[in-house]
Image (tube, rainbow, N blue to C red; front, side, top):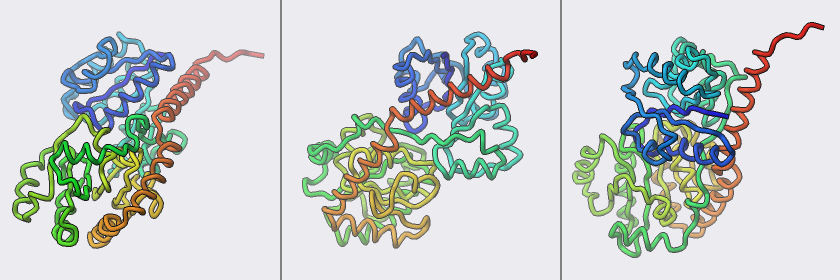
Amino acid sequence: MRIAHLEAGRHLYGGAAQVKYLLEGLTGRGVENLLLCPSESELGAAVPAELVRAMPMRGELDVTLLPRLALELRRLAPDLVHVHSRRGADLYGGYAAALAGIPAVITRRVDAAEPRVLARLKYRPYRAVVALSSAIGAQLLRAGVPAERIVEIPSAVDTQRYRPDALAGQRLRAELGLPGDALVVGVVAQLIERKRHSWLFALLPELVREWPQLRVVCFGRGPFERRLRAELGERGLTSHVVLAGFRTDLAALVPGLDVLAHPASREGLGLALIEAASAGVPVVACAVGGVPDVVADGETGVLVPRDDAAAFGRALGALLAAPDERRRFGAAARRRVERRFDAAGLVAAHHSLYTRVLAERAGAQAPMVSK
């Protein structure tokens, strides 16, 4: 089985990290993988060079991507194309595969609603659409994608890398220069509007008054960094919030958090939630998109309504005050991830999907035998 994976993202987090898991796992199953990606792709730099086919990808307006992709796919001749990202790849990838005479599937990672006309155009060439969560699956149905073409396969985590670690708390505090007695709340998210860092920061003055040892560590990068730094100064929070940037050692640091806060207003599923849960860290999050697929309210963390800031603050305060509850939630979260979000399951589900799509195509192409 020879699979061409198309990933237009440039940074190695979120969807690109999932593609890396998939490439590694499928290779272990004897699948021959190829990765089509931009030349500056961090994913492309992180996988064996013989897998990578770098090419210019300039987004939705780059109409030249369609013929270039079709030409490259004809040359590579994979059995199947798997499109993993947006940025034009989702629209052009399926049609390029069709022009090359190759079946294609696509993964839908975001929970933003799509107009039916656009969805009908975009998903027409795909044999299957992978939805990361039940919320995304429901949106695809509303957009007119036939139910039989929707396959739910959630994101996954390497549970051996992200695992509880009794020494991680000390390591985290030393690495970031935090007080030894700090109560540490983490936020793992791009610094973009829908992740709502500002919404969380507005709650912190009251929490800091009750918990002077509270420290909030924000892992991630993005266009809102300068604005958020200014806001922290205006709110007098610079000694209580650390903008730690993008870290490649998250697996060693996340287990040291006391709580993960996830105030996002939209979320397809939430890889950061899965990684925290795998590390045994309880979560406080807004019940949006696919988040309830990951966080079991009252069992592995606390879910609050999307715009109920007061409830979010109360939930954080309650967990900060209850170390036994944090440990109980964290242990339950780890068990849930091992059952539902392990990377081996991600690989097995995709391998099964590819096998089915190729078998269906072979059946459709088989000549009729007269009796």
